Structure formats: C-alpha cells, structure tokens
Amino acid sequence: MASVGIRNDKLYFDFRYQGKRCKEYTKLENTPANIKRMEAALKKIDLALKTGEFDYEKFFPGSKKIPKVKKEVVQHVVTEVQKRPDTPLFSEFSQEWLEENILRWKRSYRTSIKGTLDTRLVPYFGEERVGNITKAMILKFRASLAKVSHETGDSELSNDRINHIMTPLRMILDDAADRYEFTSPAIGLKPLKVPRVDIEPFTLDEVKKIIRYVRPDFRNYYIVRFFTGLRTGEIDGLQWQYVDFENRQILVRETVVQGRIDTTKTLESRREVEMSPPVYEALLEQKKVSFGHSKFVFCNRAGGSYEHRNVTQRIWYPTLEKIGIKSRKPYQTRHTAATLWLAAGENPEWIARQMGHTTTQMLFTVYSRYVPNLTRRDGSAFETLLMSSGFEVSGETL
Image (tube, rainbow, N blue to C red; front, side):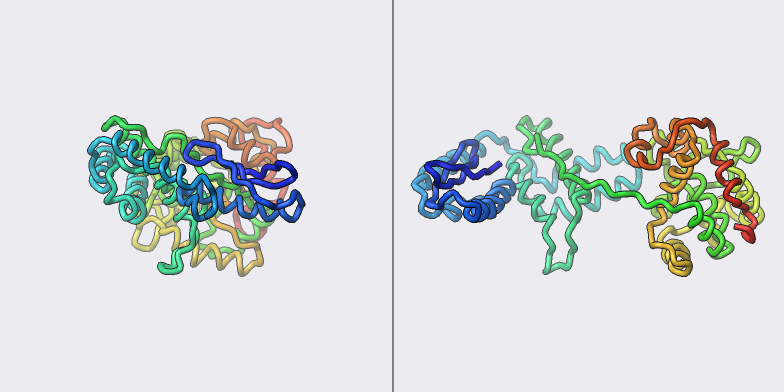
C-alpha cells in the first residue's frame, strides 16, 4: 500500500514496485494542503499498481531510478516466460474444463458459467496461453469490469457480480496450473468487498393489506409466499405431490429455474415446511382451482408453472403501487416470514429449518435486529401472532 513519508520536513512517495520498496522524494513542504495533494496522487499510483498499468516513467519522469527499473522489468518478464511451459490457449482449455465439470453442476449454474465464459472470459483471455496469464493481467481484467463502457452501453458491474465472474477464472487457472505444473497467477487473489444490503421485510399490517387488495386469483399464492418463506423457484415449482395435508407440511423437493424443474438450491434446501392455519386454508382453496388441471399448485392457464418475471411485473409491483406500499422485490416475502417468526418469539433453530439453513448463524447475521427473545418452540407462537392481529383468510376481514 502506497503512503506519504516525511524527511527533513519534505514529503516523499513510499510504495512497492516489482517486489521492491521505492521512495520518490519531492520538494513539497510538510503542510496539510501538500499532504492532501500527495494522497490524491497516491490513489492513482495505488490503482495503477493493482491493475498492472503502473508506468514508472509516466508517474516519475525525472527519476534517477528509471534505467534500473526498466532493466529489472525486462529481466522479470524474460524470467517469467522462461519458467512457463508450452500450454494451451485459454479458449481451448476453458472449453475442456467446462466439459469435464459440467455434469457436477445444476443446470442453472451451467448456464451461468457458460455465459460468463462466452461473454467475459474467452473474449478477453481467449488467445492467451493459460501458462502466460499473469496476476497483473487478471487485475487489469477485473478493473475493466468495474468501468462503465460508453461504447457498448454496459452499466457498471457491482462488486458481487465481478466476484462471480472472477470465480470461474480462478478455477480454470488453478486447474491449469495443477495440470501443467506452473504457479497459478490467481493465488492470493482476494474477492472484492461486497457491502451487506439491508433487508426490507413487510410488516404484518402491510402483508394483510397486500393480501386484501391483490388480484383474487393470486391471493392464495401470496399467502403461501408470505407465511412459509419459500423462495420464488420453490413456490413456483411446488407440485401437489409435495403438499401433505395430513401432516400439514409442504415438502420442498424441487424448484423451477428458467421454466424447467430442477433440484433444490442446496441439499439443505430440501426440507419440510410447516403449514400455519392461513397457509393450510389457502392451499385447500387452491386445490379447488388447480388440482387435476396441473401438477403445479400455482399455474398458468396452460397448466405450466408461473413465469416469475411476468408475475412480478403484472401482479406484484402494480399491487404495491396501487395500495401505496414501498416497492420491494418479491424475495422480501421470504425475509418477511423470517422476521414475523422471530417477532413471534419462535425458536431460531426451528426457523432455520423452515428457511432451509443448516445453522442459526444466518438468522443472527441477517435478522439480528428482529430477534426479541428466544422463548418459543415450534410454530405455535406464530399462529398466536396471526390470531391476535385479527388475520383471517376470507379476505373480507383482513
């Protein structure tokens, strides 16, 4: 990390380049204004060093170190090339890597990885030999992802999206390094920091209002969404064979991803979700509508599963706008279920099982400010909360 140093009351730049410490002295006096100027320049130096775009002569044109630095850079490049074996092109190896691993992944993940290869990684690294890709090249690529492209119209990518793009690149280079016996340039590459996004669950009064005013043929759908914590793909992919009325449980066994039935997101997501009275009654009502017409509990006119983008744009957002509730993504229904259970005082371990989490860590990380106590046990407290609020499924008294 570059820094500002002081010697004889004069300021100097202190940074590391090519593994060596460098100091470049200035004639600037040690004043707050000059320090501020130096720090601004340091930010540019630091960024250039991280992305591999640092040009010593450009930043310090009169430096006496330039001849020595140039010589060391040439020696470093020659040494690195000599160490690298004859390896395949990134475009060739990445395709081989994809074919070897594709059977291990869920269909949705395969699609995501292939899309990243086709649109991001191969266009950038395709003609490079995997053994010749350096860490500087990787950092430069990552930096390019964070820039807005005025030519293509692409918007700036978030740190989270950039990390997802970098993951298969790291996996490919690590695999290539192991196979062709060279040091992976991705070693020690840390992911970008992703700020934690605050959840925005609905209050119980807001939930009641939404259910009261949503289009009637979607009322059962949103009752189940709000009071089970099912993910979008889980509720859209819910089939009648997984609705156990006798034991009042929803068996989460499959999900719908991009219109196709798939396995659950994780092994832990395969679970049994308890039906509270509103959910039980809503599913009984829904049985009159779709049972026998479709294998899906909630379906379109053709009997197929809902297309979530269509439902979101045609039903969800218009309903929120109509009743004056702040617009939020449908996934907040899952957060709402968790926070309502917590507000009722349900046992966190029981809530974690309902959500498909292996431990309660996620609850205390994401929902910490919604945990009033740890006194209840099994879902009964949630039923008490609903009853005390006057919640009824009929719609007229919500």
